[in-house]
Length: 195
Image (cartoon, rainbow, N blue to C red; front, side):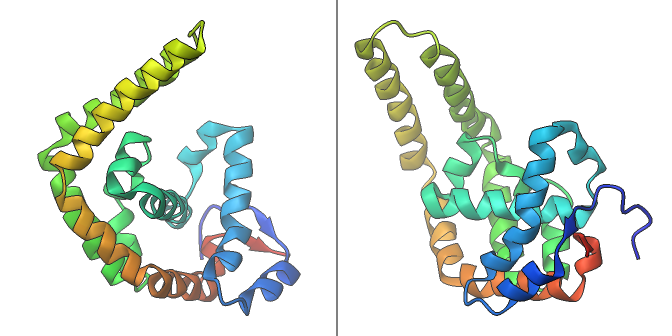
């Protein structure tokens, strides 16, 4: 049992039952992550009060979305590399998602070895966002987009080791997400207060 349930959202049991039988594990998991993101939108600093299970589920949600849409490099560029932080790999492995943990550990090794270069890609994205807000013309906007695209393309071309890991992720993501769903179902008190 958790010592502190203060920052666990309330989830309707009827919503959980409705989504538990879905073929898509995310239908069930969104009951929790949607509440977490609502909490974070209202008070971003509340993340410091989340337990490890909440943090890992949020990080997995980010990782899944980023890797599916653009691979691990996109995840890094967009500043969502939470899966490389502690305690992600250990916790997700304890949930039974050992293939995801292995893929993340190998991606983290590439990231750590090349962190400075990869974070320059992240900085380019931040600089682009700041500059884009100040452009005066569509021509300037297109030129900025082209510059950032070139920097990001260079990263994709240079760090091709991430490609194989993204491919591995694609082959196991549905099964591993189902494993995570099963863990959440069996340990729901770590994720929310059911009403």
